[in-house]
Length: 186
Ligand code: FES
Ligand code: FES
Image 1 (cartoon, rainbow, N blue to C red):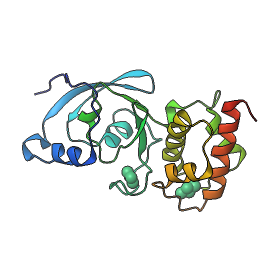
Image 2: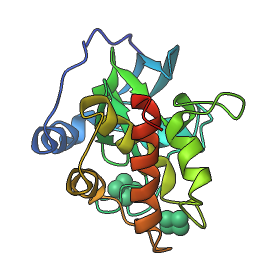
Image 3: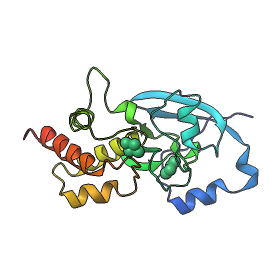
Image 4: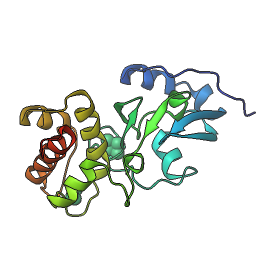
């Protein structure tokens, strides 16, 4: 039976997330879960242990977050959970009830792109683009906490993200360019 979730947003460690997702008794338990998605209210009614990525790409109709490995190894699925990076491929949708989720669609629009999106276009930082939605939100989280990151900090923040097209140098240039623009130094 569906029931509304009363859970508040809580940061859940990967180990605890896995433990909370494991009991067979919860595997098929459905829940009505409410959270904020890209600044708007979102509600899903699905099994609690469904990965957030499936909710985003399925009933919520977003194609930005991608499925790469499904095992927290490539970063293609990364979204922001209350401003911090989270792997949507393994995070149970129940863990985001009451939270704010930001995907690449929430950073900017074609008409009013985020400075990072402008910079990535300006630097042609990417080829196929498969990795970029995760990289863009991770870079946005980095610039929110460090407006003038050293290259080492950019590399560290983006290290979990694989880019099979080898665009790494251009990506780092684009993050530097966006940071400068956001500081008003461009
Ligand atoms: S799909 Fe989530 S890290 Fe690869
Ligand atoms: S641009 Fe193709 S995987 Fe990064």
